[in-house]
Each structure stands twice: as C-alpha cells, then as structure tokens.
Length: 103
Image (cartoon, rainbow, N blue to C red):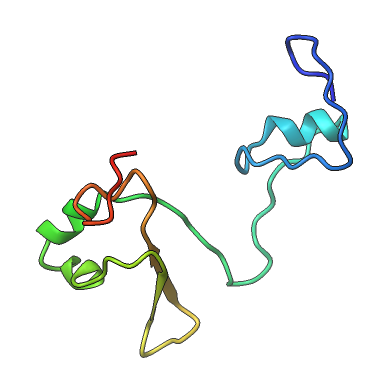
C-alpha cells in the first residue's frame, strides 16, 4: 500500500478501521465501496457519553450506578428482548471512575 507521503507498506493483511465512510477501503479496492443499510434489525449505534453526565441525570444514573468494573453490561428491553443496550467504559473517558488512569 502506498501512503500519501509516498512511503510504501508491505503486509500480509491490511486492516482499515477508520469508520463507515472509510477512505482506506477505497484506496485498497481501487473503487468506491459505499456503506449499505443493514438488511436486518440487528443494527448497532456507538457513541460516547461522559460518565458524570449519566450520573447527574436521574433517568440514566441506574445504568452506571455501582458499575466500576472493566467489563461490559447488557440491558435488554423486557417487552422486546431483541432490543439491547451494551454499556462499557472507555479508557481515558471514565474521569469519574476510581479506575481512571488519567490517560
């Protein structure tokens, strides 16, 4: 793969992880590869919310209250178990957590 500065990288595998509108995928394939809508209901949206914002809001506080571990939590909708919320902490984004490393 030739980078924009002219340097060349040789590898057995190239992983492009710059998002759904990736410029890397087109560079590797040599043609556009636009994102397509999901063909099923198993979609995922990822976003970050500062932990303190969740704690400060009484409606969202239960999602983080008492949770300081490094694992993930899964919440399901009692009426529709296919609807799920997965919650996990991101390093450097957990300033109110006792596990915050300040990174």
